[in-house]
Image (cartoon, rainbow, N blue to C red; front, side):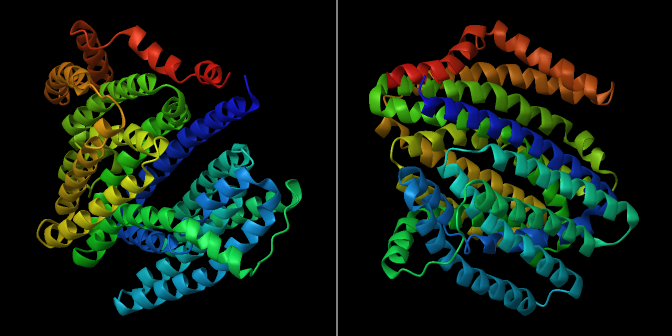
Length: 486
C-alpha cells in the first residue's frame, strides 16, 4: 500500500471521528441553548451568526482550496502562496468588516442585535485566517491537528457557553464564547504553522503571483458564495422579513438536519478518492460504486426523514415550551433529508469526474431560486415559508445534478428506483407504527422498535442484504484503491 493511500485512509479516519464528535457536541450545546433562551433570543443569536457567516465568504473567496491544491503540488512554494493569499485577505477582511458594520446599522437593528453582530464578526475574521493556516496542513496531507482543533473549538464553546448561560451574563457574553473559541483556533493553527512546519508567515506583494492566485480562485469563489448564501441567507431573510422569533423556530429544523449530515459527509469523504481513481482507470466500477452508494444512502435517509416527520411534535418538546411553532417547519424541512443525503455522492461524482463548473452552475441556480422563493414566501408564511423553500430547492439541486449523471457514467437508475420503492414501503409502515404508538409508549422505545421494524421489513422485501453493505465498503476500501495504483 502506497504512502499516499495510507495518508488518505488516516485523514479520512481523523476527519470522520472529528466530524461526528463535533456534530454531537454542537447539537448538545444548541439544545441546551434553545431550552434556556427561548425562540426570540435564540433567533437573535443565530441571526447574528448567519449574518456574519455570509460575509465571511468574501474574505476567503476560495483561497483555501487553491492554497491546499498548490501546496500539495509544490511544497517548496508554500510560503510564497501563503504570503500572497494573506496579502489579499487582509484588505478583504477590512472591506468585509466595514460592510458588516455599515449594513447592520443601515437596517436599523436594535443595539443588542448590532452588538451580537459586532462580536460575531471577530469569529468571522479569525476563522477565515484559521482556515487558511489549516489549508497549508491539508496541502501537507495532514488533517490530524485540524481534527483535534475542531473538537477543542466545540468544547470551548460548550464549556464557556454553558458557564455564561447559567451565570446569567446575557447574550453578548454568549456570543463571546464563540469568539473565544475562534481566538484559540487562530492561535493554535498559527503556532502549528510557525513552530511545527517552520513556515514564515508574512505578506507578499508580488503582482504576478497575486494575479495568478486570484485567477485560480474564481471557480472556487463562485461556488463558495453561492453555497454560503444558499445555506445562511434564509435565516437572515427570516430575521429581516419576519422577526427574530421565527429565526429561532426555524433553527430547530436547520440544526437537526445539519447535525445529521455527518453521516453522508463522512461517507462521501471515503467515497471521493475511490470515485476519482475509478474515473481514470475503471469506468464500469465507477458506475457500480456510485449506484451502491446511492442505495446505501436511500436505506439510511428514508427512515430518518419519515421517523422525525412522524415524531416531530415529541422531538420539539426536547427544546421545552415555546417551540410549538417549530413542528410544521421541522416536518416540511425533514422531508428534504433524502435529497440532501443523496446530494453528497452526486457532488462527489461531479467533482471526481471534472465537472466542478457544473456543480457551481447548479449551486448558482439553486441559490437564486432560494432567494426569490424566500422573499416571496417568508412575509406570508414566516418559518413555514423558509422551510418550503428549503425543501423545494434541495429537490431542485438533486434533480439538476441527477440530470448530469447519465452524461458521465452508464447509469442504471432502475436499480436505485426499485430499492427506493422497497425502502419506501418499509418506511411507510414504520411511520404509521411510530405515529400510532408515540402517545402510547416511551418515545425512545418507539424509535428503537421503529428502526427494528424498518430493517426487518426491508430485509423481508429483498431490499437489504448484508452482502450489499459489505460490497459498498469493499468497493472503495484502502485495499481496493491501493490495488488500482499498482
